[in-house]
Length: 383
Image (cartoon, helix red, strand yellow):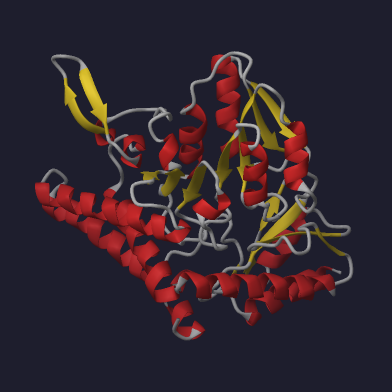
């Protein structure tokens, strides 16, 4: 990887502020913004119907699938392009053949993106939804989940990294426990893809739903989902459109779905957005380097924790040793919004979290000591 100064120069959105909110949206690289701008300008100048534009789109989609597969070490053909993490979780959850009385589990530190599809299956098919109390995610998560599995449990929805506590959960152990009982594992990767090393084969998960706009620094409205190849045929697309079909005979009312994960891609996408995520993934893989980025994130989150632990009145809710790229913090005597506002006055961008009532700090690979010092000083000034 080039010098950090060169990297930060490629991220003009963070040049004048201390941006510590990648867990919501990562900064958009200048190269990605330029690719998207050029794609949008072509749509204006050349129109949106020409075959050249369609061919460019399909080339970009092919690149996006392949690059997501590189990010999570997935086999070819196992990743579908989606619009966000939640769409991927719907593929995993709504794609099952549910029966009344079936049960699904989720931890009690999950994002609504992984919970809402469960609620819909409960209403639509009479599936029972149960939450598993795993505390802050720092204990024996696999043991607690395995103890909660019952005879009707069919699927677990779980985050790799909790959006609310920042804990990186032991997915490989969880998957082993679930598979001992024939339970599928759908992983919400909103805070892990691009933040920590991921190998879906080593994790042995069944589904892995990823965003584009967070740690991978892509545009909003992009994402992907990994589907275990052995489950491809058994998983029904929640919606089916032209992109998901390999062939169809409208007179005979017959069709054949794509043989791989493309069956989960419904139809039209925002072409500049697809061009943008293709470039952001290329940038992360080739210019930044995944391993370099992961090490930077690890170093930054540890340094940030050490700094904040020395500030009187600060409590850190992320379990030690389970950090990924997030730290969840509260300040005695101050509401989360007061902390966010005080940091904003020092050009430090963080966000509030509802449960626990705290603020969340994201330490990206592009952040440096100056960003962390600005955060510490802004919070210390409150005391």
